[in-house]
Amino acid sequence: MSTTPLDRVPAWSLAVVAMLSVQLGAAISVGLFDEVGVGGTAWLRLTLGAIGFVLIARPRYWQWSLRELRAPVLLGVVSGLMTLAFLAAIDRLPLGTVVAIEFLGPLTVAALHSRDRRALAWPVLAFVGVVLLTEPWQGTPDLLGIALAAIAAVGWGLYIVITQHVGDRFSGVDGLAISLPVAALVAAVVGVPQSWGNLTVQVLLVAAGAAILLPLIPWTFELYALRRLTKSAFGTLMALEPAIAIVIGAIVLSQAPTALQLVGIACVVGAGVAAERTGHREIELPDLETPTT
Image 1: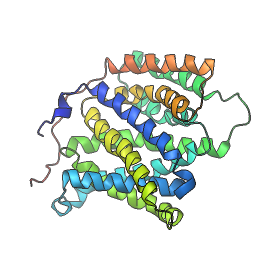
Image 2: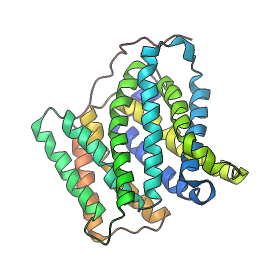
Image 3: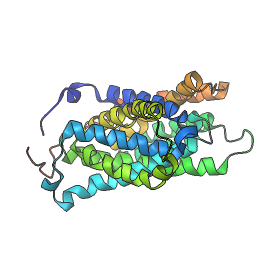
Image 4: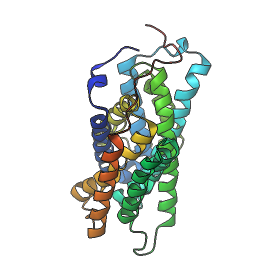
């Protein structure tokens, strides 16, 4: 597998930039909910993102076997459902709360794939931070919002596992050029009916900006990061995301954190940095050959 400039960038920095991009994209997406609905927002973002990846990779789909296409197609289904659930959750709950719940997916991946028992301390510390960020003891919980965030958590965990598998077997962003159109089709089931008749130039411009921030930038960077990080390290490094979501939520959406949530931020940042220091993996050659162009 040939290397690219992104292969020479530290894996942890790719993951951090991806997380910043995800949360900025999520915050921008909130402004589209009133115009095209949650489903319409997800569909527009994924569709525009898919167009971007296809233009970049210019994949020749017919040159891959059905066996080779199976993993990226599955990734597309998971990505589409995860995006729908996540956006529906942030329509009901603060961004930081949703991401804290959603982080339980990567947290589970980190715990299940850790070979060193001592490494389990970092998911535990991250879990404490997630609880402090979520503050489940405050007020009456929105059970539907929590359920949607939990579905997104399952999707995020599966996304990490499948993305690493796809990244090991497809060059560049070829795998994403296969998975993103599938994700867009999944979101289209609810997105097209919601957005039909409301697609103004302004909506499309905002959606294009949101699509660059999520999925174009982060899913590309995460793909390259997962080629050089273990699932355990990447999953625990994602502990930074609830903290980033709290900050973005406060700045962009005026969702100010409490004192306990600030303590939670310190916990998850500490866990994420500690996990990254011991979680590198070597870039592996793909088991399946990617067709040449």
